[in-house]
Structures are given as C-alpha cells and as structure tokens.
Length: 336
Image (tube, rainbow, N blue to C red; front, side):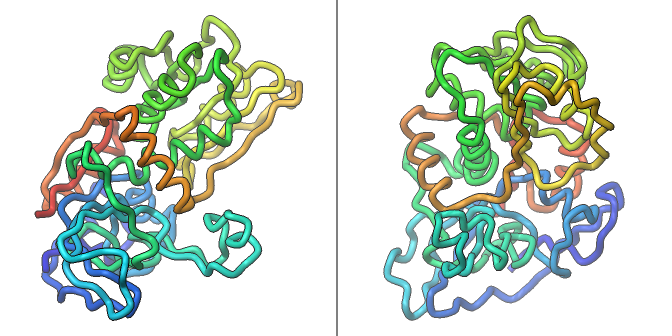
C-alpha cells in the first residue's frame, strides 16, 4: 500500500513526510482493516512533524479517517465488509482505570492517539479497533465527514466545557478547521447568542470565512470587541490570544483552550485580567461519546465544512499551507 510516513522530526518546510510502499496491515482479533478514502489534516500532524508532540517514529500520521471495511479480525461483529466507518484521535484506552470508568477515557494514562502513538490514516489502508470506529451519517460525503472526526468533535467538547447558555456572547480566537465548524454548532444550539471572531488580520481568509458564517463581529486578536464576552475558545497555536481572551472576558467568564501544544509561550499575565472569578480550562484529547454525540448532531443541523482537497503526495505542502494560514476551513487528503 501507499503511505505517507514521518521518519524524522523536522520543520515542515524541509518535507519530513515521505511517500512509501508498505504492506497492508493485518488485523488483531478485535480490529478491522479499513480501506481509506480520505483523511483530514490537523495541526496535530504539524506538531508531530516539528517535534512539539513526541510521536513514535516512524509513524503514519492522520486521525480524521473515512473509509470502508476491508477485512475484519476473528472477533469483530459490529461491521460487515464494505461498510463506511470513521476513525478519530482516540485510538484506544485501557477501559479499566478511574478515568475510563468515569467516562473520561480522554485522560487515560494509556490513551493512544491515532497517527501519533500508532499508525493512522495517511495511507491506503489502516487498522483500528472495532469499538473505536464510528458509522458515518449518510448526509455527508467522505470529504465532508473527515473534518468532523477531530476538528468538529473536539470543537464540540470545547463548547461543552464552556458551559455556554443561549443568549450569551462567545469569542472564537482563531478561525480554522475547528472554529468554523464550532461556529455552526453554536448558531444551532444557541440561536440568540452572539459570536465574536478574532483572527490575525482583518480581511484575511479566516476573517472573511467568519463573516460568511454570520459572525456578529470580526476583528484582530488584540482588538477590543463591542461588548465583553462570556466565554472564549482559543484554537490558535500562539500564546498571545490567551492573554487577550482573558482581558476581554466578562467576570465569571471561562476560557477553553482547544489544542494540544502552543508554538509560542503565553505572555506574563497581570492577575487583574484573571480576577473576577474567571476560569481557564484545556481540552485534553477526546472521548468516543464526544464523537458519537457530535456526528449525530452534525447530521441533524447539518454542518457543512469548508474543505480544501489535496492529494496524498501533497501532504508536506498541505501542512506547510496550514502552518502559514494559506487556506480556509479544513484540509483533507484524498487517498483513494
């Protein structure tokens, strides 16, 4: 099979991901082999390639996988050959620890991330555990469905963690793959709420996309919005938006940071911008329940991601463009 393999840590400008021919993987008893159709592109893959995350090496990245069942292990009963399924960031958890037993498998110390701790979906075939795959609603094409498995589902988790209520104001710092999907979710769940969007520059691709999706106000990261915000979700790779979000939060507001690593440090904070019972939370990974709930809700709305398609051979270029904000919405690799 053809696969995109990360064998060394390096800047994406130096093209560290190589296309190789590998054997099709063999499933264990409770695993399935998936013939991959498409795989979404995520900033996590950029963090892996450049060393902010520590993947196993070599590794096949990719954790927003859409494909069809190609082969099943001896104890698989959930699917038949040819059925469409998805694989998300959560590849496996122990199922026995205190976190798993409380429904917080995202915090399991044995958590395995797809495309980081194990091989993922930047390949023509991949293996996954039957219980960590998801049926995909028919309302979505393969290309539309891929970003829902991480960008969408993790945005859903972040929104839940805000505790938002209808009629309140939320600020979205950054407007990429996750934020533009979360925006659609907010409009559906909280129709009387206002969404303020903060991007790098007025008039850039993300700000124009935010206006298209109906943001009530769009400005730059350092600007002051028309009113204080009750909640903020930060999806940016830099530290400055954390300070700015806290500055713009209303008392008793909550900031949720929706990412695994920051590329730059969070600036020193004066306690006065945190005072007033403001809170900061982080999103750590994702649960299967998040994915299942979000896919059902996304089909009901229905959510329509803005997608830029790339060939598998263009993986380094696609991640370079993601790093420098060169496309709108979500990137998706077409595999087969």
